[in-house]
Length: 200
Image 1 (cartoon, rainbow, N blue to C red):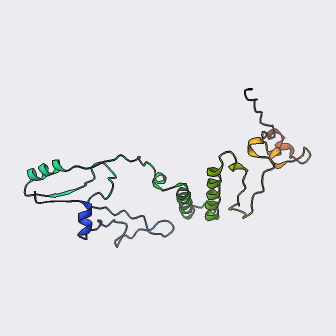
Image 2 (cartoon, rainbow, N blue to C red):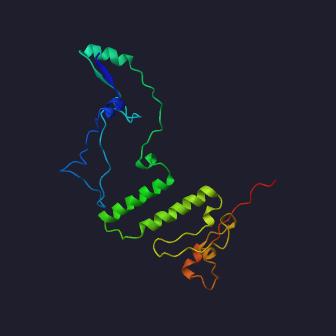
Image 3 (cartoon, rainbow, N blue to C red):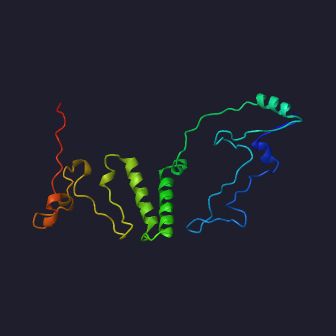
């Protein structure tokens, strides 16, 4: 055996990632919104973590295949299992990054289809606030109002706390009297019946 190299050795020698086809000309691929595609460059050896089975972790230089195999058997790698990531969103760092990811995806759909456009950034902000309130109070986050991304208006507070609102009909939600409520919607205004909990 002549030498064993790791990713750190290659980086110190100035050996960088193998360029992705998304970057160099003539490719230079763009997303639907004109932004650069995600960098798909590959490193010759695993850096800090192994991302798939069979990813090389060391480079052995030897005078024969047999000598290289003998050296490979002496290499010890400390593998620590990481949670599996099966969806792109799962790789993002937190819930807020996932909301941004979904917003970017909606923008791509709008650009590629005839979907009507709207203020996606405002929708992201509403979801940011919703997630913040949900983390603060799982039983009270539904009592908050948010700015509509369609009209820019703030939703008024509900007349009853969510945990105390036992009637979820449209009539109760809008607080309409019988003569104000449209006849065709009367059938939809049946109250939700909540059985009493166990006593004691």
